[in-house]
Structure formats: C-alpha cells, structure tokens
Amino acid sequence: MKQRLQFFAKAPEIMKAVSALNKTVEECGLEEGLMHLVKLRASQINGCSYCVEMHSREARRDGETETRLYLVAAWKESPLFSERERAALGWTEKVTNISDNGVTDDLYARTLEHFSEEELVKLTVAIGMINTWNRLCVSFHAIHPMPAAKAA
Image 1: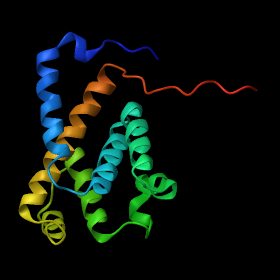
Image 2: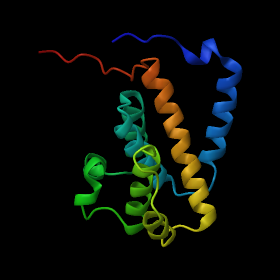
Image 3: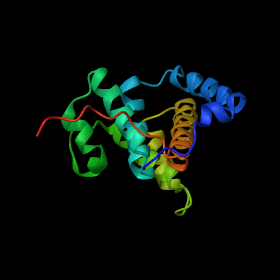
C-alpha cells in the first residue's frame, strides 16, 4: 500500500483546526487510560492501521498492559475492564457505528450510570475526534511506522 497524499501538507489550515480540537479533547479531563482504550476501539472498528498502531504504542508507553490491549476488540468477553471502561467502550462502538440504529435510550441511561452528563459530552467529542482521524488516515492510506526488517 502506498500513501495517497499528505493531508497536513495539502490542507494546512483545516488540519490546524483539527489539531487544535484534538488538543482540547486531549486536555478535557477524562482519564488518559480510558482515552487510549476508546481511541483503540474506534480505530479497530474503522480498520485504521495507522491509529491502531499509534494508540496501542501510546497506551503501552503510558502503562497499559499487553493483555488488555489485545482484549480491547473482545472487551465484552473479558473481566479485565472496569464498569466505567465497559460503558465507554460500549458507547464508543455505538457512536462509531451510529448509522446502525443510532444510540438507544437504554445505552444512554446505562452509560450515564458511569459518566456525568458533562463527561459524556466530552467522551462523545473524543469519539468523534478519533473517528475524524480514522477517516483521514484510512481515506488517504496513512502508513504506520514500519519496524526494521528482522534477519531470517
């Protein structure tokens, strides 16, 4: 696969605005570890190899375990995630796949058991942000860093 274009270079003004929103989202006050899980799960759903690699690497750097990172894709079947994390991951899946019947009243109510209304707005904007990055990276074939080839 070959990268189609460098979106930062081709549209610097709008990418500056996207980056500014991203910085605001990063500083919104939600837990860093939770944000890593949300970004990773949305990126998995969207098939964004660039973002899956980046957010897995960043999560490991910030202390997340390999096992939990492997199990993000199967979080419903794993007891390794807190109730708050499970609520965030469920919300992430529905918001990312919003065209599949939207977000139900039941999910909204269950998510509010673990997030304040303010936090839920912040979480939803964070999900929108990673979905924006995923759409840019997938559409333009952003290539994740490639490790040096190992000798046979």
